[in-house]
Length: 242
Length: 219
Image (cartoon, rainbow over all chains, first blue to last red; front, side):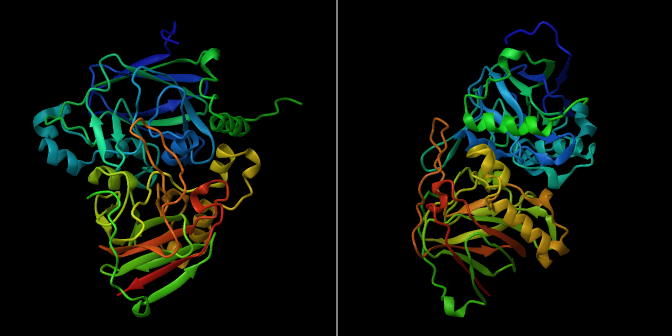
């Protein structure tokens, strides 16, 4: 699905800023890197039971992968699937490096307060997440290993990590087709390993549209994902009127 | 810090303040004070030891796999690795390691992930998260800190081998551990150690035969 006919809504998140909201099952969220070099740090929670949350380890080991891209699914810690990645114009999204925090931002970029910079202030990934989580009664205990969409980090055979700054270009996008009613929490602050010396994180555009039936099964080529979707269907199973 | 930094310890087990055995499939909880040294021994080899650490005074501060990985630019743990909390503090430092490589991205098995990874019918099999939840429900230290499922983040798998390729592949390989191999760490703050001695029978992380571990603490 390259160009859906109708978007339900669109919103631009300036670099460094943060957002949270609910994406319903059957809806696709498209994240677009507007200027290149953006990082979209994202966590997922089951809207009905927010103790159920994105699980990095289950996502990686169910799919025998270290990177996330088209055809992969984002697994919860309860054996279900929040969403399938149904399109990805990059080839790699990181999920092991976590979030930048206030100390890291200060060390790398110096002090950037609201007093001087207004909304260009230097925000961190962790602080953005905590603000958004607080709106839903969640907090530090609910911060787990997140996904960093648009960021590519490889590991060599000794385990040394390498951040690839040019992985995502202007206009690159990722489609997340949701299978659960999901609380999405997002920060567009810099990736913690981004070597840039100046604070200018890229903006991220959000757009949603109805998932088309032909992409719905895109991640089921992996048997683990097919079973995860079975578990997800059980969660929403409803007998209807007798 | 390089991979496989093999360093032996000079500490003598007969002088340890704590010397216990944790059976396969059991949880284990202990407070380790700042300055104490904590050792896990893989008694029979190829045993995955799923481990979490918490600030003993406030469980909101806990081991963070992502902080540990990104602050040291290193995916695997061995001698010299610092184990960071979600507040950016060093909780423990690995000071001896005769195994050479430990995992922190593979997570803990659960009844639910066993259904997706293997078959829906695997749900009743014992799992690490069941052991964690059992400990949280019964152990006085965990109860005192009001710990719950909310407090279970990504863990360390001591002795487990999860090689990642440059192309982005990830495997659960046969263990690099062997009988008697150990890993030893010094506590940099008062920590609660929460262990599940992994009962997984569906993959080679325990060589299909979960076995006991020995746990020692020196003052």
